[in-house]
Length: 186
Image 1: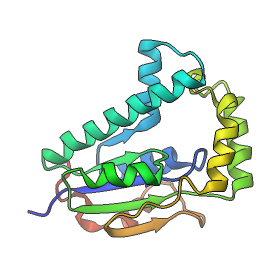
Image 2: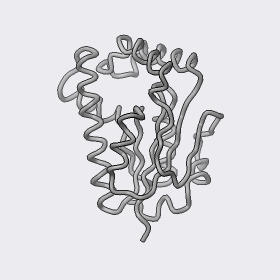
Image 3: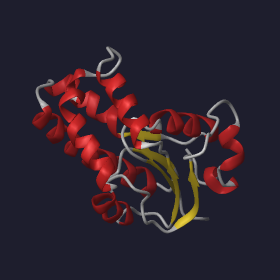
Image 4: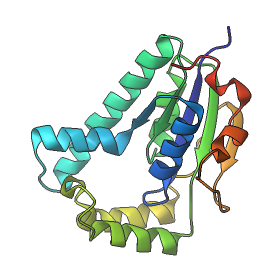
């Protein structure tokens, strides 16, 4: 039996990672762990405050994300992780997970488009207020300049970059995911 596959969907904030990850996970039938989904559950339970609190809750969300992935992979199942992984921290954490196979999807756009999308998201009622996106904008702009959310250096079974247009409708991911992606699925 092949080891489980860990699909990592990453990129800078407001790049469309969650949309891509959801379509992929649904398309190939793998469980999905989303950092912001976990973070929002924590906000709903613990409350939303300011940007400092958002960072604290974000750190807890990452810990829960990695713990959930460790449990799924240890059970022999493949899964999809989605987050804006900071390369300097995430590479070390991901390499400690019990899998021998990675597939990374890096979702990106121009810095100008990302900032525009982030501003629009920050002013939207659809975004959980706990993220404190308005206060986070300077951090996001700095992180984009510094390349904080660059593609990760992982031992890939494959890598897909969505810097080009990628359709997320229907079966598009069935054809780009390795056929073995669901070998050890749920």
